[in-house]
Length: 120
Image 1 (cartoon, rainbow, N blue to C red):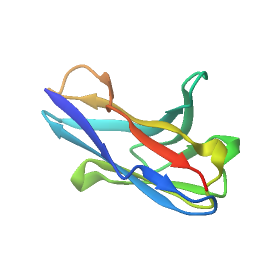
Image 2: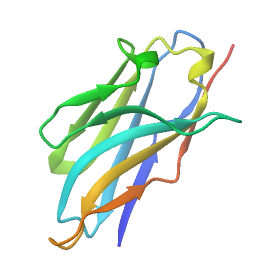
Image 3: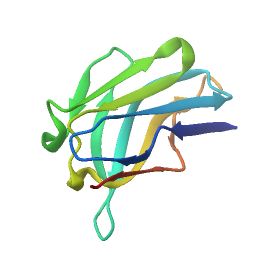
């Protein structure tokens, strides 16, 4: 069984920073792309940033220049460094990963979500 465990959310002032982490544990044979999504109240879940196994990255326009995604392949962990946070960044942030647990098929996994609140 595979689990994605997120950490690092919380309450921060506008202009502040947070770093989210997401570690894949359990039966993990290989991981392809990893990414972060967010969902604000009353809105659809949206892609924030993604990173491929080769290190290529993709960002939502709203976070370009402020957020940085990275990964530690040895630790099966993906990070999201969030700087210059704005109130509109407030949302539940979800980790997502494309994982091959047994060396055969690929599956899409989600973390449980971590709340990020940007408020004065």
